[in-house]
Image (cartoon, rainbow, N blue to C red):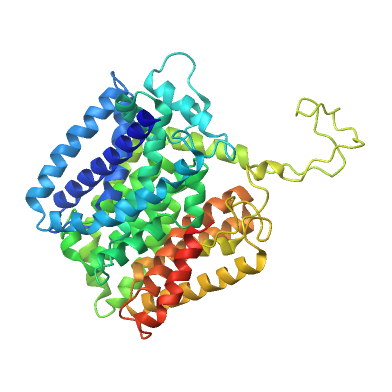
Length: 501
């Protein structure tokens, strides 16, 4: 067990360090003068792209590992040379990282061992481990995930880490728990008015909101990556206008956003761009309105940088276009709904021993059952407020350990905290966070109305960290009209609701 623990944490901490160094170097290269807490998210996106490119070269995992370490070393050294506040900024981010890593370790304490999480909830990891094993030694028939264009950036990172751990399951687990820690580091952005302790609380709550923690506990990882990219992208947009010393001026200032978008492609394929694109589409008009005295001038100044970012994204995406197209086709095939009248069996060869569509006396297959994945039905949207109805996020309120009235009271508390946070964000003109919230909420609503429960649950999970970031920040906002002392009971309730199962 000790070897598994060491391997897990070596992988997690190693990826966090590599991501932070890569992101800091990219920010410094694009003109930033001060280190932004968003750097680890930028670096995580870059690491996923680099790992996928290099893991297919001779040497495979070792080549990917050496490339990541070498590039991170150069980028980190360059950042330390160019950025004015790197040690101080890292010191402010560190408590949030420690708290988030400790919280992300709770599932291992509950399970009593290290290794694959959520085997009783989700069996998908077997496919992912098979794909990663093939990347490490691509002999024989390629796995279906590879053939179908499934994004394998995280798998490539695990293969690289496997060179250190010697155990692919441990490497994959370390990569998985590193992601919410990186999200917590990024969440420290825009919390300069809070103490380190309060900033660490807000950041940890953001990274491990109930639904995010639930996806971590069942061994899911793509959703954690995408949620981190959405949060980091929104806070990077904020830096562009609120902290320009963290973003840099000129032609290259939008490159970090393009890197995050590229990472989303290599981790979540084309759907990963939906949250980022919608956030950008809502944020840009709001910023133009804020500069309504000269919107044309603002557009002309931003156009060259936007073009440079789009060119970079196109260049990085070009080698993957065929795989992206294949993934789109496979998603359509999996999510196609095939309704069948109740009381009829599946067609011959469709499973279950059906008799060519003849009526079945006892067989009645639930309509659209392939749309549920490992769920029981739609996830209650009130779960987005961070209230734990059960250790199993799939159950309805009242069916788990928490009685339904307690859940709904907690949800009301969460809604009030969100309202307080939204008021604070509006008062402080937090256009980027508000845009991310509106974008994620709109995508969830569209998925709830027009897609499957499985898809809408993922969309709700993307929304949860943004909701928690806004709500927790509002509860702790020292600039709010309500004194912080009067908000203390709400803070304690928020923490209890977020962490007590």
